[in-house]
Image (cartoon, rainbow, N blue to C red):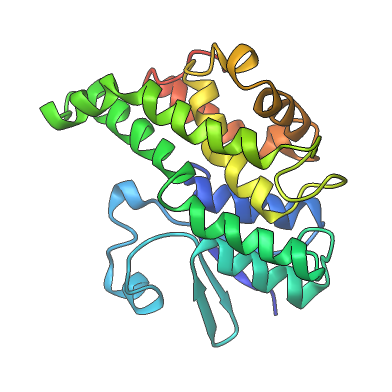
Length: 225
C-alpha cells in the first residue's frame, strides 16, 4: 500500500517532502489539498491533522504531520541515508537546523503571505509595515545561512551532498528569489548565492517549482519566473 501525502505545491514544506520522494523515485499517492479553499479545515481533514495544516503523511493507520518529521520518517523507513545521514554529528546538525528553521527561514513565508494579501487587496496596515522591514528580515536570515555554509561547505550540513534540510530551506528561500528580493545576495552573501545555484541542479527542481511559478504569476508576485 502506497503512503498518502496530503499536500499542495504552493506550500513550501509540502514541496520539500514531494521533492524528497521524487529524487528517490519513490511512488506516493499525492492527495492535493487546497488550504485556500478551506480543505484543511474540513472535519475529515482535521481528523487526520488537528492543527489543520499540510503536509500530512498517512502510512496505513499511522498519520504524521510536520514536514521535517515526515522527511525523517520516510528517509529512515526507506533507507535514504544520504538525505538523512546516520552519522551522529551530521544528524545533530540536521536537528540543530530544523529547530532554528521555524522561527527564522520560515519567516520568508510571512513576507510571501503578506505580499499576496496586499496584491489581492486584503492587506492590513500591519502587513504593509512588515513588508517595509522585509530586507532586514532577509538579511538577518541570510547572515546565519552564510555562517552555516562556512569552511567551504557545499550544503548546509554536509560538504558532499544535499540533505533534507537543504530541501526544506531552499523551498523557503527560492520564493524570495522568484519575488525579486535577492538582488544583492551575490554581493552580500556569496556562499548563499552559490548554494542556491547548486540546489537548482538537484533532479526534479524545475518540476517541483512549476506550479509555484504559475501561482506567483497569477497573483503578480513573480519578478523572476
